[in-house]
Amino acid sequence: MKKTPTKMADGRELIYYDEDESVIRDNTDLRKLPELQFTSEIRHDPLLDEWVVVASHRQSRTFLPPTNRCPLCATSAENPTEIPASDYDVVVFENRFPSLALSALDIDPAVPVDAGLVDRRPARGRSEVVVFTSDHDRSFSQLSLARVRTVLDVWADRTADLSAMPGIEQVFPFENCGIEIGVTLSHPHGQIYAYPFVTPKTNRMLRSARHYREEKGRNLFVDVLAAERRLGERVVVANDNWTAFVPSAARWPIDLHIYPHRQMPDLTGLTSTERADFAELYLTVLGKLDALYGKRLPYIAGWHQAPVSRDRDLAYLHMELFSVQRAADKLKYLAGSESGMAVWINDATPERIAEMLREAGI
Image (cartoon, rainbow, N blue to C red; front, top):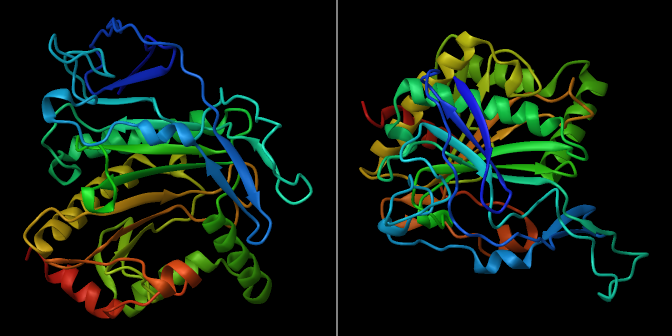
């Protein structure tokens, strides 16, 4: 894989990742774009002890443009896009409408917030877009094995680079697929958030893992994976290096965790064989999702990685994938109990979800 960094017309970074190492990239962004300034900030919620990102400029971001105006397609004379090349394999660039940006401006001190209760800081992190293919109509499930492997290598490379940036505490690569879960661009792509704090979900998982180690002397994630593999009832698919299973307390109508069989803090630790085996297993999983109701299933898939600077011995790299599709013609909405009190109610048992997925596509 060949990596070629360049700059866009407004100064944002763009990186080509080419499978053919002989490719020469000299594409120049000919658009006339104004210099961007971001006023994102993070505010600390003292009741929940969580950080919240406030990024009001994102209200004006691009929303489901027609195919001939897609900003993620390769550039043509009729449609100059975010990607200056006429063709590409995988591309990563800084989001034009970022939640987090290293260049975020200082916060406005005139905003009336009690500094003794609410800590406010510039949202200095990084928001990147990862475009998986130049083919606008292709989904991740339709990528080749080689391309999925390339994307995995890109996720690992970006994890390493972003983790080395000043102030970054956690790196989260993820994909949103389907307008049902809020996708605003239909071209196959994902995102990476590099947070200036450790996320609430990771903090909670690590607290549980720390308590478990103090009580049992073992790693919680290791034991969860071992139990699921031993019982087998919720395992959907597995190979020599990975297991995909429905968690025993699944929250979503479709809820899958994908674990490597070896504990590691983040994607950079995966071997070549583990990366190849993931690509094969993941395409099988996505094929089952699309076969479940005979149509492309909307989902969110994200990599849970260790914080950059702490608890790396406790954490366990894994992917969590879920869908809001609860039946062929029905979506799950987060109603009173879920939205108001974070108490989840699932209409299907985890065992039934796993059985449905095992049988899908057979």
